[in-house]
Amino acid sequence: MNYRIRQVVEFENHFSDFLKQQPKNVQNKIFKVLEAIETLERVPSTYLRAIIGSNGLYEARIKLGSNIWRVFCFFDDGNLVILLNAFTKKTQKTPRAEIERALKLMQKYYKTRVR
Image (cartoon, rainbow, N blue to C red; front, side, top):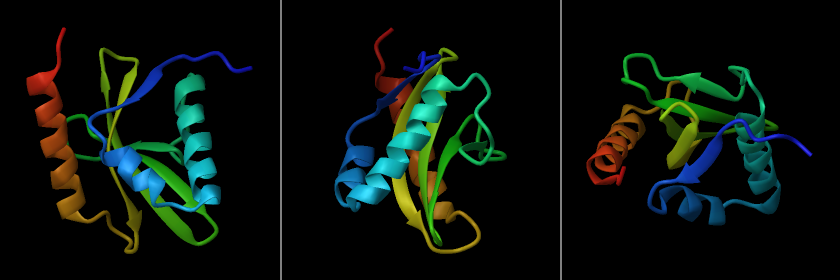
């Protein structure tokens, strides 16, 4: 059993709505990546990478065969990872519209969170 270093939670239901639409093998791969984020002291960039110039936004990176998925997230209080929106990646670059959507959700989180 792996020790949890950080907690992964979802903000609103954007991630779970996306997850429900995915086949079981994709869901399992996403859960493996999220488990790595929860349990590894240093998460490899193959699993989690900062979005440059985004003020704290990260993307969890999931690859299965030739298919790629991204789940946007950020850290709150250092160890809480908040899952935002997710999408199937179809181009080399992450679509700007997806990044903007994640940034808006992150702002909404900070405006509505209870301390």
